[in-house]
Length: 129
Image (cartoon, rainbow, N blue to C red; front, top):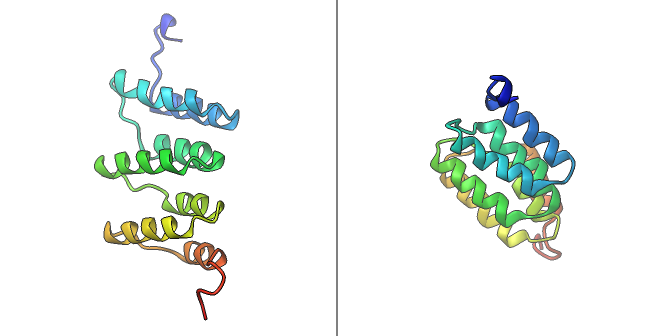
C-alpha cells in the first residue's frame, strides 16, 4: 500500500487492529497501535477500545486492558469501562472490579444500568445479608 503511494490513515489502522483482534492475534493488534504513533498518527477512541474490548478483555487480560485505559485517560480519551469491569467479574475478581468502579467514578465517568447489573450479578455470596 505504502509502496504505491497510498499512506494508511487512522481508519486503515483501526480496521487492521480489529481484524487482528478477531483472529485472536492481540499482540499484532497492539503492535499496530504502537506503530500508528511511530508513523505520526494518533490512536483514537476506536483504536484503543478495539484492542481493549475485542482483544484484552475478550482473552481475560484485565491487567493489560487497565494499562491501556490509563494511557487513554492521560490522552484525555474516555474508555469503554463497562467491558473492563465485565472482564474483571468473569473470573470472579469482584474486589478489583469494585476498585476500578470507584476509580471510574472519581474520574467523572458515570456508571449505567448495565454496569450495575454486572456488578450485582457477581456479588460474592453473603454480601447482601
